[in-house]
Amino acid sequence: MNLFNLTIKEACQSLKENKISCTELLKSCLNRITKTEKILNAFITVDQENSIGLAQEYDSLIAKTKGEIFNEKPLLGIPVAIKDLFCTNNLRTTAGSNVINEYIPSYDATVVRKLKEAGVVIVGKTNEDAWGHGSSGENSDHGITKNPYDVSRVPGGSSSGSGAAMAAGACLLATGTDTGSSVRLPAAYCNLIGIKPTYGRVSRYGIISMASSFDTIGHLTRTVYDNAKVLEITAGKDPFDATSSCANVPKYSLDIDKSIKGLTIGVPREYFVEGMDKNVETKVYDAIAVLEKLGAKVKKISLPSTSYAMACYYILVPSEVSSNLARFDGIRFGREREMFGDEAKRRIMLGTYTLSAGYYDAYYLKAAKVRSLVLKDFEEAFKIVDVIIVPSSPSLPFQIGEKSKDPVQMYLSDIFLCPINIAGIPSLNVPCGFVKGLPVGMQIVGRQFGEEYLYRVGYAYEQETQFYKQLPAM
Amino acid sequence: MKKLTSEEVVHIAKLAKLKLSDEEIKKFQKQLSCIIVFVDELKKINTNNVVPTAQVTGLNNVFRDDVVIPSLSQEQALSNAQETYKGFFKVKSILE
Image (cartoon, rainbow over all chains, first blue to last red; front, side, top):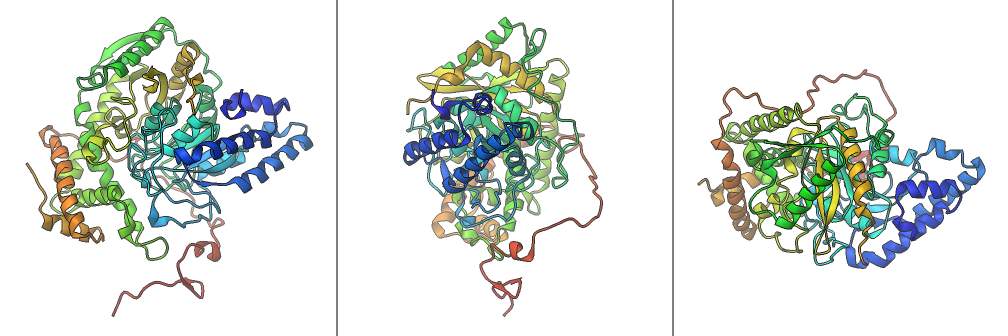
């Protein structure tokens, strides 16, 4: 077993038992980066020097405290890759864009601070669609990221580098943001567990904003247990983000192995439609059958506003994008607005249009009302089911260049993902098999602040299937 | 079918403080028109008596105590400035 393929749980155990050192674990990941990075382009910045220094420091700390330090720092020595949208103190943060190519933050995002306090070692900052705008990674100003399972295909976006880095073994944990798809699609296309938490569950402070009423902060891991463990650390109220929730943060990993017998799974007909890849659909139905065998009840449901969700999303999100990106004026820091890439320009202009005098009522206000309808659909559904299961993508990971010329086609690759953000509810991508050697993902969706159900169902399924053990050939 | 004119694209770009080349105007006119046709779908839905949503978890009026807490130093706040002058950001003049 290579160290870089360990789960967080396994790595923590081996570190505690002194079977491996933090430095060995880190170097295994750094070697993996050296081997794969030229092909994958998953990173914008690799922080070899500081990470090695910190790993060595932690090794001495383990020796000095005779392992006591693990009680204080549950993720001690775990190599982590951070999406380049998260501010990292003294470590360049570009948002994947040339506009702020040289920006070096003077502070950590709250999530970065919490992870550091938990003992992680940051290996570097991952590539992404600039500002989080995209579903493929092709909108990065730092070059395209490749999918480790097939390098002619996209890894999914916008957290493209985080997905590719995890699949390649460059780290044991990677962070991501999810405004419409950006954690779940890379997770689906790279055979990973990806959480899009409830809106407000995790602080947004220090993470470059895309659409403030949609942005959620998640992460990618190999296993469901690892994912639950990390959310316990990142979730919670933050005085620096007024929209973060005071709701109690459960110990998600504690009851994760509770039986799913008697839970009701909703299967909405609007997510199994003409035009989607039949092989993908079959894999998701197979997964539902596995859960049924484990004792869950399956109920067909309907979410009637689904067909309007994408149009609603592509009015509201660009509106918020145009407002958030207005602050990058090139006056105090950063470069001229001409440096924005095509996708950012498209979204800025679209949002400017939908918010402008004479169009506000027809577009923004109308979409904000449709948002209420989408939200109500889910509220009604969760009166009769505990979780909903839907595919993560209508297709397998697509070819690089296949959709990049046609923005509407690219937007539609998120058709099963965006409605979740409109409603602010949590969703977990869980791998559910392979078609032609390419990963397929499904989403387990829950009611607001109901993440523990997602983890329980995901864990039960993962115990049966263990798709995470199928690693890319590279 | 609603289509944007090139004048409208230029006007929007100006509002958004983006300078576009002639080629970009052409390209975005086509692409933005397609997107607007796509989102115009919403006009079909009846939203009479529906209240708009902006905050999905129902939070409102979040207050905090008005107390001074440690903040960035002046040096840190200016660390990414292109040019500084005696502890200020130095920027291009905006008045003739």
